[in-house]
Length: 201
Image (spheres, rainbow, N blue to C red):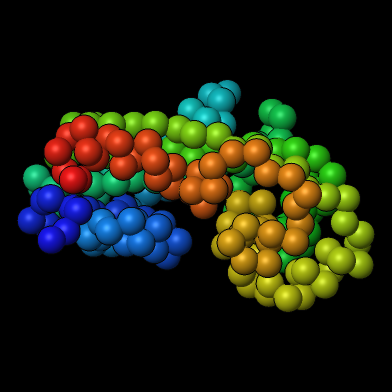
């Protein structure tokens, strides 16, 4: 007997293997259907909106883009933004860009905002954004180059140039916030919302 109560799986509007793994580990049946949205255009339209609001807008856009392709299904959109003060970061475009981001974040505390949106057809059933704060240690340039050598192309896969669940953990000295929020999927509020709507035991 499954904890997921609907006959069809939850549709995840993301190609993130980490988000899928988190959901499946929590006993939720998942169908992956990545959204095709222009994230940079959405961020540009958001203008001066807070990084938390941008994370929410991106999550909504992804869920709404996939919902028409899966009518009647429960679709989950999720996205994350990283901010250092008023500066928003995007995924690095290459090794040099990742190095620049990591140098900017070194020795400082930045915020990760993870937004989620649950949609059925054109209706948003639930949306939320959670924030975690992470402090990078003052690592040396020698360590940074070694880190970049070890992570190779993976350094461009995530905003900020790190994946905390992998080698990125070596960059940090303090973390304040929920682990799932850092992974890009605030799981506890999501599970509560799914239970409230009767989708989850």
